[in-house]
View (spheres, rainbow, N blue to C red):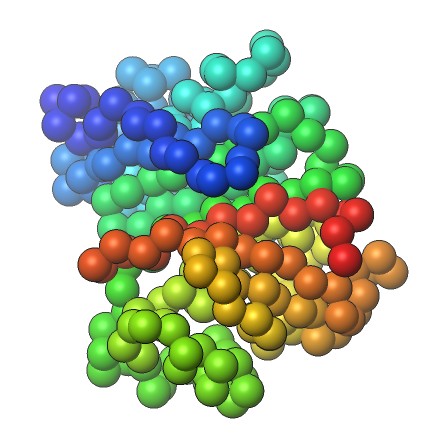
Length: 235
């Protein structure tokens, strides 16, 4: 049954964010193709041959996005799929989608995508035995040293910075228009509920090395949620 596969979206409060954020849970093992039409969402042609897990994640993400769009004074509630599988939002809307292990979340608001960007990410805690093997691709030595000041074990600290860099990437992708590396940004300051990142390389003529962005975070026992509403006017 559809109700067993996916839950009704719940509101998520993101401090300081004046848009809408909603999340839902889903069970990929219960996914069926017919749920796309039941939820009023078009399955992209590129997804027809995908495995069920990928289809379930996409559908859940677009479901919360559609719910968020319905809260805005716009007529189009469909989110297309663009280059690098990035969401293509209706004109005048900025947003971000994330899904991980049975949960999907979307943050959305009215905005000019040339001046603003939104990034959101959810992650389950990285396994302890993975930390040393994947850490060099996520943080540099200086960052890792700074992160020791946080009151969590290495796996949770790495999960946090990984998620925060995902949110940063999503928020800036619309301006950069291409993939850029996790090592292009560095944690330079730690505050309660917030990490400050500084770009180490020029990404565009306006996104220069030295630009800083503050990514907020919420942590539970096994999950990290990070969020950024970026503006070109910020330092």
